[in-house]
Image (tube, rainbow, N blue to C red; front, side, top):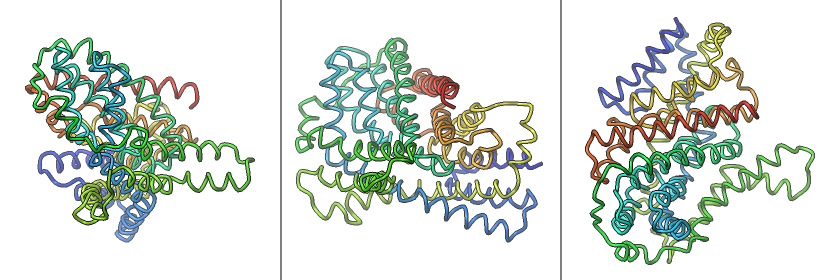
Length: 442
């Protein structure tokens, strides 16, 4: 019955968020409490699980999400994200527009939300596609899939950070697995964009010329400076994970690197570096009405959903469902398929990759030992498997679907045939790559 109530709970989450447009935080909270009663948990145990799940989850990852969002705000508003995109364009060449846009989208989406990244880069994409005399379809799909790859699989994007926190995965290992897996999936996506999507003709018809776009970002920082807030924290976190693998290494320098590699310290350093990006830093940028104020307002929803996901996970854990499912799965080894399929089902049903990541991590968290995911590397692999599933598939219930199609001049049918199918290629190729990685190191 516990498994039945879990399936009913997931269906109810989808019903509340999709049919009745209830905020995911409210939906997760109500369903968690309802599941607790249906599972026969005492009322005081439910209350304890709610408080513990919310507090523990946000205590470990709430600050990381906030700091990551602030870095993204400075990257976007200072022109730093555009500077990185311009650098990629110079390296790949303007004749390889889909390749350029895919790579741009990938790097820009690490600090900047996918929707914002597409809005930022699409004018440049239109101008380049027009100049190269190619269809806007291929380059737009490449951009959208590049953004999605990093958005779902590479911290410090909020979704993967939240999933890593809920599963107790080492963030450095998640980054170490997520980057190569997502890049391989991006390569498959670029083949899809250039060999299939590009065959559909859509006139670029740019709103702005390259010169006008460049004028908008005339005060953008240099690419080296722009990259620091993103890649310094990633490097510090990876260094800490590497040092943890060698406990015999000691000394003041090891202690110092372990300290600055602590995820929230590394991201705090990233925030300070991000403050160097504007041509002229003003304290108003840190105000309630400034860049930081808007970034914190934008991050509030994600933080609340993450906390509610923690509540759902704790209620599930304390209901004893892990033992029940463990007994059921003794003869059926689903392995990585289970987190991938749950995330894919939730993504397809309710549209948000972040909600799919957090909800799936909440469901899988109490089952990790039962499913045989005990080691640090296995936990990291599960996080990326959930991320891959959360990309599959983007369609009409996903806001990003409408951003991509409307800004590219696609109708709904073209959107399903190009963008939705493309996200299936992206998530599917990422999962297949993970299966190989799991066989080698899992």
